[in-house]
Length: 143
Image 1 (cartoon, rainbow, N blue to C red):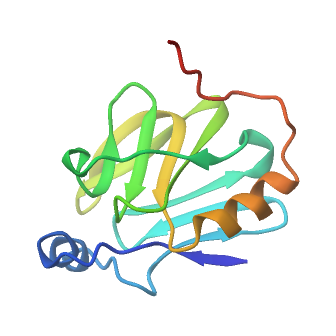
Image 2 (cartoon, helix red, strand yellow):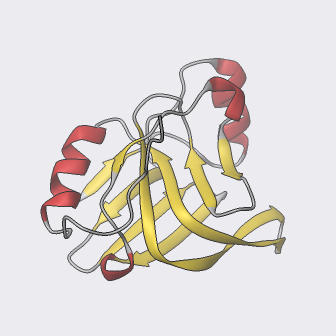
Image 3 (cartoon, helix red, strand yellow):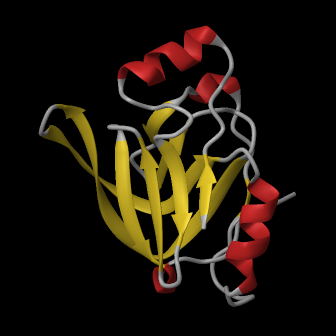
Protein backbone atom coordinates (compact mmCIF):
# COMPACT_ATOMS: atom_id res chain seq x y z
CA UNK A 1 0.00 0.00 0.00
CA UNK A 2 1.29 3.46 -0.86
CA UNK A 3 1.35 6.32 1.65
CA UNK A 4 2.17 9.79 0.36
CA UNK A 5 4.50 12.09 2.22
CA UNK A 6 3.21 15.34 3.65
CA UNK A 7 4.75 18.24 1.71
CA UNK A 8 5.14 21.47 3.68
CA UNK A 9 2.80 24.16 2.34
CA UNK A 10 5.25 26.99 3.00
CA UNK A 11 6.77 28.03 -0.37
CA UNK A 12 10.15 28.63 1.29
CA UNK A 13 10.18 24.94 2.16
CA UNK A 14 8.31 23.35 -0.74
CA UNK A 15 10.11 25.17 -3.57
CA UNK A 16 13.60 23.83 -2.72
CA UNK A 17 12.11 20.33 -2.39
CA UNK A 18 10.45 20.68 -5.82
CA UNK A 19 13.84 21.53 -7.37
CA UNK A 20 14.93 18.00 -6.43
CA UNK A 21 11.81 16.34 -7.79
CA UNK A 22 10.06 16.06 -4.44
CA UNK A 23 6.34 16.56 -5.01
CA UNK A 24 3.01 15.19 -3.93
CA UNK A 25 3.24 12.19 -6.32
CA UNK A 26 7.00 11.53 -6.11
CA UNK A 27 7.38 11.46 -2.32
CA UNK A 28 5.90 8.31 -0.79
CA UNK A 29 6.37 5.20 1.30
CA UNK A 30 5.35 1.82 -0.10
CA UNK A 31 4.47 -0.77 2.55
CA UNK A 32 4.70 -4.08 0.72
CA UNK A 33 4.35 -7.65 1.96
CA UNK A 34 8.05 -8.05 2.84
CA UNK A 35 9.64 -4.62 2.40
CA UNK A 36 9.33 -0.89 2.94
CA UNK A 37 10.32 1.49 0.14
CA UNK A 38 10.92 5.14 1.04
CA UNK A 39 11.19 7.62 -1.83
CA UNK A 40 11.49 11.40 -1.80
CA UNK A 41 11.94 12.46 -5.41
CA UNK A 42 15.61 12.40 -6.45
CA UNK A 43 16.81 12.98 -2.90
CA UNK A 44 16.12 9.62 -1.26
CA UNK A 45 15.28 6.14 -2.51
CA UNK A 46 15.88 3.27 -0.09
CA UNK A 47 14.38 -0.18 0.41
CA UNK A 48 14.27 -1.96 3.76
CA UNK A 49 13.30 -5.54 4.54
CA UNK A 50 10.49 -5.54 7.11
CA UNK A 51 12.53 -8.04 9.11
CA UNK A 52 15.18 -5.39 9.78
CA UNK A 53 12.70 -2.82 11.17
CA UNK A 54 11.29 -2.31 14.67
CA UNK A 55 7.95 -0.73 15.59
CA UNK A 56 7.18 2.71 14.19
CA UNK A 57 6.07 5.65 16.31
CA UNK A 58 5.23 9.35 16.00
CA UNK A 59 8.30 11.58 16.24
CA UNK A 60 8.65 15.28 17.00
CA UNK A 61 10.48 17.23 14.26
CA UNK A 62 11.01 20.94 15.11
CA UNK A 63 11.16 23.43 12.22
CA UNK A 64 14.82 24.21 12.91
CA UNK A 65 15.81 20.62 12.03
CA UNK A 66 15.00 21.55 8.43
CA UNK A 67 13.41 19.64 5.56
CA UNK A 68 14.86 17.32 2.93
CA UNK A 69 17.28 14.47 3.56
CA UNK A 70 18.69 14.89 7.04
CA UNK A 71 21.16 13.02 9.21
CA UNK A 72 22.85 13.59 12.54
CA UNK A 73 25.74 11.29 11.44
CA UNK A 74 25.07 9.19 14.56
CA UNK A 75 22.32 6.97 13.21
CA UNK A 76 19.29 9.15 12.49
CA UNK A 77 18.48 9.47 8.79
CA UNK A 78 15.38 11.26 7.58
CA UNK A 79 13.55 12.06 4.37
CA UNK A 80 11.45 14.77 5.99
CA UNK A 81 9.16 16.86 3.79
CA UNK A 82 7.06 18.46 6.55
CA UNK A 83 7.30 19.01 10.29
CA UNK A 84 3.84 17.43 10.59
CA UNK A 85 3.08 13.70 10.53
CA UNK A 86 6.66 12.61 11.24
CA UNK A 87 7.30 8.94 11.97
CA UNK A 88 10.44 7.21 13.26
CA UNK A 89 11.23 3.53 12.72
CA UNK A 90 14.25 1.97 14.45
CA UNK A 91 16.40 -0.49 12.54
CA UNK A 92 17.21 -3.70 14.41
CA UNK A 93 20.79 -3.47 13.09
CA UNK A 94 22.63 -0.45 11.78
CA UNK A 95 22.62 -0.14 7.99
CA UNK A 96 24.73 2.14 5.82
CA UNK A 97 22.67 4.40 3.52
CA UNK A 98 23.77 6.55 0.58
CA UNK A 99 22.83 10.23 0.75
CA UNK A 100 23.33 11.92 -2.65
CA UNK A 101 24.98 15.34 -2.69
CA UNK A 102 25.65 16.21 -6.34
CA UNK A 103 24.91 13.78 -9.17
CA UNK A 104 26.52 10.42 -8.32
CA UNK A 105 28.53 11.92 -5.45
CA UNK A 106 27.30 11.49 -1.92
CA UNK A 107 27.94 10.21 1.56
CA UNK A 108 27.58 6.82 3.20
CA UNK A 109 25.94 7.40 6.58
CA UNK A 110 24.94 4.98 9.35
CA UNK A 111 21.22 4.50 9.91
CA UNK A 112 19.82 3.22 13.20
CA UNK A 113 16.55 5.16 12.98
CA UNK A 114 14.63 6.07 9.81
CA UNK A 115 12.46 9.19 9.90
CA UNK A 116 9.93 10.48 7.34
CA UNK A 117 6.73 12.55 7.25
CA UNK A 118 3.39 11.28 5.96
CA UNK A 119 -0.02 12.78 5.16
CA UNK A 120 -1.73 10.00 7.12
CA UNK A 121 0.77 8.79 9.73
CA UNK A 122 -1.77 7.11 11.99
CA UNK A 123 -3.12 4.78 9.28
CA UNK A 124 0.43 3.91 8.24
CA UNK A 125 1.46 3.14 11.84
CA UNK A 126 -1.61 0.97 12.44
CA UNK A 127 -0.88 -1.09 9.31
CA UNK A 128 2.90 -1.17 9.76
CA UNK A 129 2.89 -2.07 13.47
CA UNK A 130 0.19 -4.71 13.03
CA UNK A 131 2.81 -7.23 11.90
CA UNK A 132 5.70 -5.93 14.05
CA UNK A 133 6.71 -7.69 17.27
CA UNK A 134 5.98 -5.77 20.47
CA UNK A 135 9.62 -5.97 21.52
CA UNK A 136 12.55 -4.40 19.75
CA UNK A 137 14.19 -1.03 20.02
CA UNK A 138 12.06 1.84 21.22
CA UNK A 139 12.76 5.39 22.22
CA UNK A 140 13.40 5.73 25.94
CA UNK A 141 12.42 8.84 27.86
CA UNK A 142 14.56 9.49 30.92
CA UNK A 143 13.11 11.84 33.51
